[in-house]
Image (tube, rainbow, N blue to C red):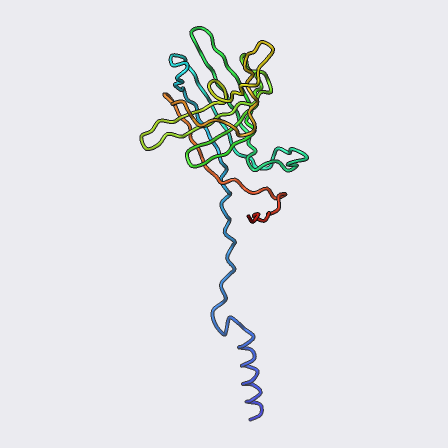
Length: 213
């Protein structure tokens, strides 16, 4: 009788120790699901525009720009760069008769909102602009039966009446990063594609309390 009891106890212990014998095997751990990379704000395209001050001229812009947050250090104010830092290229040409003015520039800032984008680019080559000049461009993607639009930081905008040279001629103020007017011209050929992404907060900038009045 004692042998039988010991045998039964041993069998029970063996059953408890063997998960295969006592029930189905536990499910294998699932692999972590890879999260999709955050999209970057961007604007791409080329277009001919109609400008009221030069209605018969051939004016064209080509833009390829992508936001690259915190990649342009600006010590001491923003040693890690800004959330609107960007890279890419801007090209424009303005032909009147047999004469063409043109410029190539490197994008340094981009910010978007829905179908619109504002960017700036620093001139590298041109026959009408000084190398190092910053140009501001705004773009509105076409949609809902409306044509695309574009604005630029020269011509009828960005004028300081008190900023004149020795001959009394107006001197165009320098455009700050991502500064451009509303898109005041109309795209008549081609167009631009805007991808919107929210800007991110600088990791070096702590939260501040809202002042009470």
